[in-house]
Length: 413
Image 1 (cartoon, helix red, strand yellow):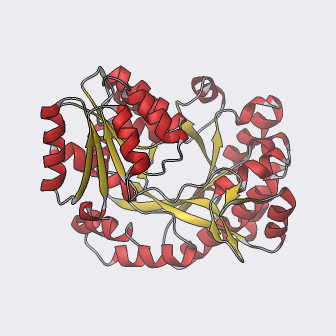
Image 2 (cartoon, rainbow, N blue to C red):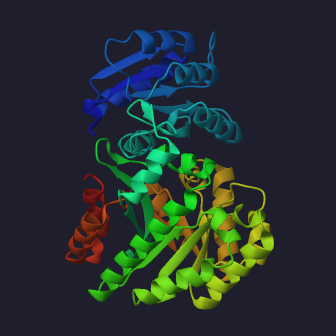
């Protein structure tokens, strides 16, 4: 989306900095820019504006109502636009403010240390168009789905994997994809996981979805490889499935049935997955590795037991949570976590995957730090199987030097 098509609200108590930001936006092509000298006036503008505000740029330390209270009240008011935090505060405070904003449901594009440059602002604004439409958990179009409705959809074969590419940073080659569940509802259209995963988990039926995704992803990967397109596929395992000691054997039978080498399938598990029935979980995971499957620890660094899990589970891949990737460009703490995660992966001789890569700056930083693989909207959104094949074919016709421009054109589809 062009900047000219967006409306902005600048909340900044410094007149000099406020005028500089407004001028910067207008120089970039913005035609609708409101401003306020504190959070209270900004909230009044937000609630009374005749047209919706697409992006708010707010300071934190302001009189009357500071940026923290403003973001809280904006979130509680149902604001569904985006926010950029601009502040001269310490980077650790900015990181805390970011976490708070996200907890209040704010679509945060980033937190930038002052003085803001046009380049940093543009890098944040690029993210405004990147996220898929947000859905309240268990809700789509103002309604919720019951477990019976979702299971009925599974029985009617309405669920399918969408594929998001995984790219090797050094070579810029697509080496595989992650399979992400989508519900092709006969009346509601494509429905995202937020509307059905938690419902199935609470009802104890998440395994039904997992097996559908596994089967369809494995079949698709086998089809790709049979046509000469070498690819791996990553699929999420539900924690509950690890309690069943027959899991590894059942998975091995599926890949054998479809003439696929187990090494082309990477099974992603969260760090808490092996905490219910530890013996059964470790038996399954060890047997899966013995059979040749890849194992990935998902969202590494977001919980307390990540390091412990690395010592007892034979992982082949470490997936770095996108929060560390997104913040590493501007925050020292996040960069330290990212750098540390990459060092751990190298020392364990396993691949490191950065997820949620959305900007050129994040891509460049990951290359500089020596990350192995990346996925995210900067490369491409999740695509249905036929679109993903077309995307791969189109990419194959371009030279390596044209890789980035091919990515950027594909993400706009």
